[in-house]
Amino acid sequence: MKETIIILGANGQIGSELALALRHKFGRQNVITTDIRPPHDLEDGDIFETANVLDKGLLKDLFIKYKPTQIYLLAAMLSATGEQYPQKAWDLNMNGLLNVLDLAVELGIKKIFWPSSIAVFGPHSPKVDTPQYCVMDPNSIYGISKLSGERLVEYYHAKYGLDIRSIRYPGIISWKTAPGGGTTDYAVHIFFEALAKGKYESFLSADTALPMMYMDDAVRATIELMDAPAENLTIRSSYNLAGISFTPTHIAQEIKKILPNFEMSYAEGDPRQAIADSWPKSIDDEYAQKDWNWKLEYNLQDLTREMIENLKNK
Image 1: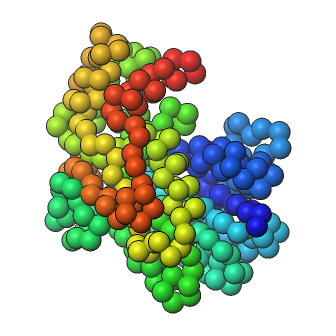
Image 2: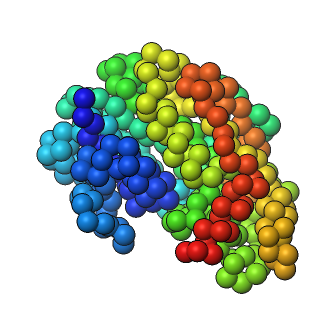
């Protein structure tokens, strides 16, 4: 059966690279990207529609026009930006999701992907090898909206049989697209600054360990989850996905192996530190490994080399 895919919020860090992978897998003509404004790098044959996930009528028209079999809902306001605009973050992250869930049920759309985040964990969650099931008390509006979203997608699966799948992404590291206001963004900024200026001031402290993942692994995980047989999936909220856990000190040390003159410093009192302190240091993703054979490919050394080589060529 032919798949027709709509990506909502396709201009962001994940969406821009996921779109490339899905076009490669399903064909350019079968992947429709959308966002509130056109992308800068639209190529001949790419299909793009301007869309706001808060406009339910427009979304319905879009879904009726293209009759998608899969929808990827990536439109969201991230953690650091969300703390500046909490009401806007809640509105976008929750009402955008509700609009898509309701329309998917109404129109019989086969499969949905919606991303969650390690931000669903909070100060009382276990910090090391954080398990799939544990105390979850997020203290950022982004984390609160993602935890609420997890409850919603599980509810819509149980009540309406909607096949919606989700991953709790760790921090994502990519060289193609600038980061979009997340707490883990230092691990992307650092590479840009290392090459441009030879130094970087981290807004997180030297010993702040967080789970991270190279974009290629994140995209592959997303597609593998969407390809998995529904009967194999035991998690209908959102799957833990472990990346590689490291601190700003660790990543600076790896960069110095390639750029020996690189210098690292640390800012004091950045509000993003409090968010990071409430998040896990490492993640246990045994359910992803068991249910859809998930395996990480890129370690810190690999992603450091990939980031610097690709940014130099860029």
